[in-house]
Structure formats: C-alpha cells, structure tokens
Amino acid sequence: MANLYETIYRQSLDEPEAFWAEQAALIDWDRPCDKVLDDSHPPMYRWFSGGRLNTCFNALDRHVAAGRGDQPALVFNSAMTGRNETFSYTELLDQVALFAGVLANCGVTAGDRVIIYMPMVPEAVIAMLACARLGAIHSVVFGGFAANELATRIDDATPKVIVAVSCGLEPDRVVEYKPLLDAAIDQADHAPGHCIILQRPECPADMGDLDIDWLSAMATAKAQDCVSVAATDPLYILYTSGTTGQPKGVVRDNGGHAVALNWSMQAIYGVDTGDVYWAASDVGWVVGHSYIVYGPLLRGCTTVMFEGKPVGTPDAGAFWKVIADNRVKVMFTAPTAIRAIRREDPDGKLLQRYDLSSLNYLFLAGERCDTETLAWAHAHLGVPVIDHWWQTETGWSIAANPAGLGLFNVVPGSAGRPMPGWDVRVLTDDGLEVGAGESGAVVCKLPLPPGSLLTLWNADERLRQAYFNTFPGFYESGDAGYIDSDGYLEVMSRTDDVINVAGHRLSTGAIEEVLATHPDVAECAVTGIRDSLKGHVPMGFLVLKSGVDREQAELRGEAVALVREKIGPVAAFRKVIIIARLPKTRSGKILRRTLRNIVDGEVFSVPATIDDPAILDDIEDTLRQAGMIGV
Image (tube, rainbow, N blue to C red):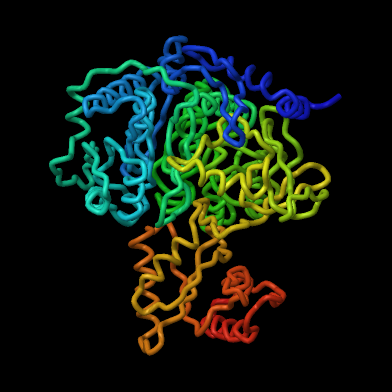
C-alpha cells in the first residue's frame, strides 16, 4: 500500500484542482472562487480566480472568533534589550487593527504600497498584518541594506507610506536607520507621503516634516475592519537578490498564498493549532514572511520572534534558551547558524544546560547543508534534522521531508523529495530530461502550485524571460542538481551568478557593478567561494587601470568599504585580490567558475574556450602568495 506522502503527491499532480480545492476549504472566504485554476494565459497561471478573502482575517480574526483569543499568537524575545513580550491573538489583533487605522489616516487604501524598513521587532509583524488588513501591498526591506538599495525599492514600489524604526541593534553597535531612510528618500525620484517612525530608546531619531511618531499615531487611531480583496490581488512585494540596478520584486497573491502556507504548516512541519513554532530568520527575507508571520498565524500556532544572533548574544546557547523558554516544538533556521554554534561550542556543552524535550524537529534551509553540520545537530539534539529547499519565488518548499505526511529516511546532502504540487524535473541545457543520478538544471513543470510567485512587480515580460523562456512549460529555478534513484533531490549549485551568503541571495553582478565605480579599477569579477561559516562569501578580483601605482592594502580596503556602503554589510564582502588580467573566453566572457575553483583549491580543467591559458597560472601564483587558496 502506498504511504500517505505518495498518495497525496500523486493526487496533487494528477488532480491539482481537486487537491487544492480541498485545502482551500480550510481557509475562510468572503466569496468562493469561480475557478480553482485559471490556465487561460500560460505561463501566467492564477489560483482561486473570482474568490475573495482577507489574509489578516484568516491570520487573526477567525482564531479570535473561534474562541482562541487568549492563546499566545506572537512571542517576542530580544537578547539585545532584554524585552520579552507575548501577544495573545486578541492583543495582536487589537494592535494590528489600530495600526491599520494609522495607515488609513495616512491615506492608505487597498492596492497602495507600503514599505516596511524595520529590524526584528514585533511592530514589523504588526505593520505587515495591518497592510494586509487594508488590502494594501507591503514590501519589507531588510535593514542591512544601504540607502541606495532602499532608494531603488522606493522608486520601484512607489509607496504611499514608509514604516521605519529609529535604529537596529547589533551585538557590538547600534545601527541608525533613520539617516539611511532620509538618504534613500533624498536619492529616490519617488517621495512617500509620510514616514511612520517607531522610536527605540536605544537611539531616538530626529523627526522631519514627513515623519509621524508611531506611538502618538496609535494613541489617536481608530481600529479598522478587514477589507475584502480578490484572491489574485497582491499581498506583498519582496525584492530578491542585492541588485543595484533594476530591482526584481517578487509578487505574492492573497488566496493561493494563504491556502498553501496554511497547508504547509501541518503537512511539512508537523505543527497545528496551538503548537509553538520558531523560524529563526528575519522578517526582511522570504522565510520571515512565510514562517515567522503568515504560515504560523494562518494555522493558529504560536510564532516566536527573536532579536539576537546564534552566537554572541550572549553566547552559543542563545537558540537553545529560546527553545527551552518557549517550549518550541519545531525550529527552522539556516545551516550557517548551526555552523556558528558548532564553531563556538563544538561539544554542545551549552546545549546541555537547557531542557529541549519540547523540540520535535529541526528544519534547515537557505543553502545546502553540509553533512558534518547536519550530523552534529542530530547527535546533540536527538531529533530529526531536515534539510529542505525553496526560494523567494516559490514561497514554500519545493522539496522537503514532510513531518506531517510521514518522514522518509534522512539522506545527508539531499533536500528531500518533491512536495505535493511540485513536479520537479532535471533537464539538459537543450531541455531534455536526464536519468536518475544525472546532473542538470532543476526545473518545475507548470503550473506551479498555489503560493508561488504571481509575477514580478510591473514586469510581466521580465518574469517570462527570467523564469519561463529558457525551458518552455517549466519554471527555471536557476539551480543545478540531480534526482537519485530513490527520488531524493540533490541541489548542488547555482546555474547563474547569484550566490548564497548565510542564506541570503546576493548578486555577484551587483557587487561587480559597485566595484567598477572605483576610480582606479579597470575591470573586476566577483565569484562566490566556500566559507566554513556562511556557506559562501563573495571574493573580488580587481584589475587596475594602467599607470595606477598605489599601496594594494589601502586599495583593497577602499573596495571593501565601497561595497559595504552601496550593498550593505549583509554582503559579507571582505576578500579582495588585485591581479594583472582576468581569465576570459575568446568571446570575452569572464571565467568566474574557474576563478572559484582556483580559490577553493579544486581540481579543474582549463576551459577549451579560454583566450590565454597562461593567465590562470599567474592568478594561481598571486593567490598562493596571498595565502588565499583553499581558505
């Protein structure tokens, strides 16, 4: 007899409309849909066309109406300030409805955009849900990005209001957000009508003409009811990669998103109403959207929000303390966090101080988890450690090991098996499907399931070019890998020049664009190299203009500072080397993969298309003298 996973997986592919209609019945609708799957304009598929609902109502109001208003909805723990606060569903609903009133007083209505530029504070969650309550479209911008990155998003999303905070807190410093916001508005062509500022006592900000104080505005606001929106209306825009050119804003809808995330909480993560779930991520990333805010609240769970780091706030036992204090059932974090903890506490002595008996599963995502990290976590936690794979564009897991459908054997290095709704294939560059164990481009057969990207903001044609044109009838993930004979998916690397730095996708091209602005740089290349903590970090190769004769250490420092200013510290850009020439093909393409292989100390073949093979020997000598090979 087929197991539960196999039965549900086959149904989801063979009868997708019936399968997702059944899951949609678990969501409250103002009006049922006319059509579960609208396939009239491929590849622009739409789910639950004609249906109407409100995402905030499904995340908050319906749980209060069902008598669960006293249940904890959001637990906030700050290792930075010592602030610990629990919001019941009723209390969170009251705060969200009031802040929706603040936004309404600023003229925000359904379809308007609101940018949220905040660190890990509960007010960020309140702002997101308040936007959803009004039918407005929020765009959360990660606080680690610099002013010009925020400016490009302001111009692309054209927000009516920006919600921000006076400062963010790092273990060794206070990051003033307000000056970054002011600089971004000065740089942007679009001007918001208002900026709502949450003042933190650690660093209050000077207020300007556009600025409204959060607390003062809340004191006079009137609570707002939910606004019904179409299932296919946008819920949010989330900009992916660290691009400094035209941003790529992934748009998520309301209906498909609510259905898919509500279903995923139980089926994939094995949690249900009343369970405590913790995604140790940031609200600025897709994990924060899906599994700090929307997924757990849609399912009626208690979600944990932590302001702190896996190490240094105060030590490598910080995560285990959060689990023990809050009786967390399932935790979701990135492998880089576990690597950092392992580096500081290799024997797990700090872990042993805490009662972790509530923990059932540890899920990892954001980058491929190395087998050593997975084995260490399993040995010390004594629970299944599950690597799984998804993307900003997909919104939830393409491949996983589903706790709610019956776990498979954990295969280290694998992302698990395709999840219901995801028809995963591996293709050659010519679009031919490969056999088991053969590598190629990982793609997903259309239509994608509910919850995946609706489009790119104001860029339907760019959506087609980026994801659908290379392999007609398929979504191009941009990742390479293979499916083994048991159906497990191994995701090995990116097929483009986007790299994963501690789970954050960053464009190497964006960093190159910044480095190229240095007055002494003639050419440059950036590639991702292995890093024992972050998975990958960017490394820059600079070719100087003729006649430049400067101290190299000083120039390298300027390059690092430039990237920090323009992209932000999230890029983790610290490795720079100056070389005489870049390796290129005869057509002028820079051989970035070959550069990466040299730095990582890997055996490689000299590309047949290289213009001058001697360049590689010169670069290898330079790197070896600098001690940069295999580090």
